Image 1 (cartoon, helix red, strand yellow):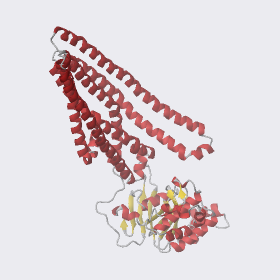
Image 2: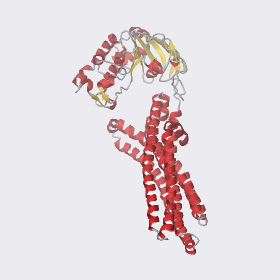
Image 3: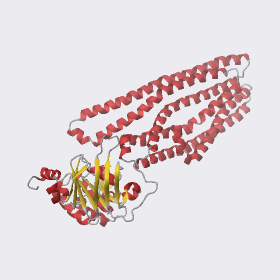
Image 4: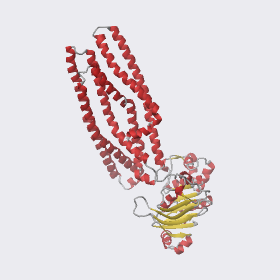
Length: 576
């Protein structure tokens, strides 16, 4: 999987990779030539007392060494450019794919896992590529070249290579078999820690309010200890493997000096050749040690590549149709035709046979108990999910036949949980319309009943907003979210229970201002409070996913027992 992922990610950097490969080849040839020159100095210079030969050959070695240093610096630079570029591209690809995910895919992966995949997993692949381009490519060249040059120096001692290399290969194979599964487990356990930490940070107030700090600490410590235990198991494997490899390496050195010393003593081998042979063996063993070092990175990078590939290969359930159809005219008309919807792997539908029309210039209120399907209904309009049966039409065209960008351009959505982005008030308001003027922003704030507290903020429109809007109250967040939708001036406004944090007076003023501001648009207000939808032009009452009442407030009071029961429970029998 790692190779397949890199094969897709590396083509834009093929020049850098090719250049680095050439540089590494040149470095490897230079490194293989140096022991031969060293042997010549010993055999022809030191042994014969030829000082001039020593200086000449030593100068050549010095020049080659300096050139190798320059090539190494250049190679690391271009290897870094390629690896960092691949990391950047993978992060961008994951981000783009996640942006296209529907609620179904978000539930499948989970927020914590997606964050880990776009940070830690990409970093593991990026680190592997960096090391591979600077070390791994040269390792096989040094290993093969070292064997050839060692045999060239003395074939008699070459039997040591046949013994040493398979021993080291066996240690590496055992290391791989034991380490790869553990590295996969580590990535999953990092996901778990990220999820727990995210929950504890975002839910800090709830944790403290219910005096659950100790239990949450215990939950984090359990997950942390689990990850630590797995990491220790991996380190124990390497703690055994590295000394074993170093022991094999040192014993091979002793064997070379022992048997080579006898050959030198008998005159069958020059001392310079023994030195060169020893250096070539060290280069071969260095290449093997390099492979071991890569073993540390390969399993984790492979596990990370599988997780990245799982995101990139996931096809969003909600996507643009092959041949999108655009409505003739954007009026804001929404039709539900015999709509039934069930969540994936759900035993029964959430919505049953819904048929109604949302018309431009009208305000439609949708009310019902918790779990009656109110928010789900809005998700079908925006195509957060696709209907199981029936059809949802916007401006006469099925939403599944329209392009997503074209469809979403019709809506001004204020979600149930008002979310603000880190930036300024103006930047948040311009989220839906970057070209909006300051005057349009102030107008939207006035309608949303938010101008008073924005005026009081230091900097007013340039006042800072923290991530999630944590530096303003819940009611202020809701009003800013409503103002953000108003700035967009869409054909369809969708208010998903977004008045819940407002007091009755502010709620009344806001709805009154909204009526004049959105007179030509289709307005849908989902609410559990009767007072919010009391004066809507049309009210739909949902109960367990079915329409049990439809009409104006007065009409529903006379013919819908479910609606009347809701009104009585909230406003009292006098209001009913």
